[in-house]
Length: 192
Length: 192
Image 1 (cartoon, rainbow over the protein chains, first blue to last red):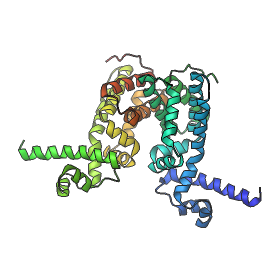
Image 2: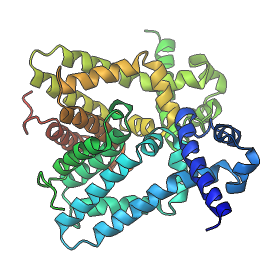
Image 3: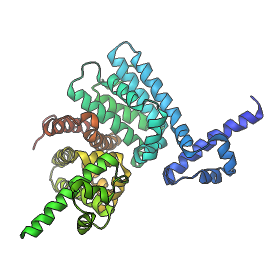
Image 4: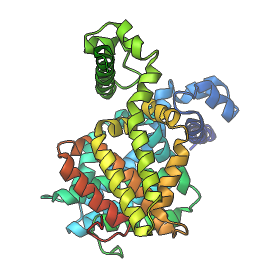
């Protein structure tokens, strides 16, 4: 890898981190390419070198978490036992939420991000359906279906809540996982 | 009450119901006063007679649910026993969500409504804090605090979810209440 390529990759990563921070402070709509350039201390042309429009930045900010979620769902689907499927999905989902807290908080409060995810994810609705399917199993009772929806929405929103932002990753992860397992009727200690 | 006043009140109620329906279909931003007038089959002047701007309509659409929520929180706070406080709040909150499903769904997906609620409610943050306080009690363990956040967010989002929109009010209310009680560690059958 040449120094130039390394620099470009470093700039891209810093650009995305800066964009996420500005999106959080000002919303996606309230953030311009110029603001991102200013915060990075580079010219707007340097931002244009990586991204032609804000939509591309929003998509790039959300993309890694979406790819991870796809992998988690696919890995969960590949487990043999139902219990292991639920355990794998819950653990992966909670871990993802905790590591991407800022993005999750933004997703919950900013429709610009929600729209970007729906575009970037290709088939986001399909992914959500697979996620629910793993949690509820092939012939779910109504109670399980409602619990799965409460769990997914509740864990994601609580994970991004300002009220719990002071918790460190390990603590928040353990608490959310415990609640998720309780909601989905899994035994107290994870098998994995 | 004169016929004129009765007509005006009827028009106002129909106007708010129509506005909520259009907000759901097109978002708050995508809905104009003219669209509301057209859907009602009245002139824009007739809409102006009741509301001078869309902001006023959004506030009026959300206001009844907010007033109800305030009453539920105050009634819960007035209960003597901790258990009764939690039971009262959970039952009232779930019932409110189920009866105002369309509004709840809109609140979860449209920042225009979220902003309107934050304006209309006077001190919406304060109300949310009182809500959480009733659920967690005076010296909450971390686990209870996280569970309360998962419950409030999860119940509201699941209640407004398109995926569960086919459930009738009684069924959805019973399922959500059961999950909420489980999350907050209340016994299976409500005392009230």
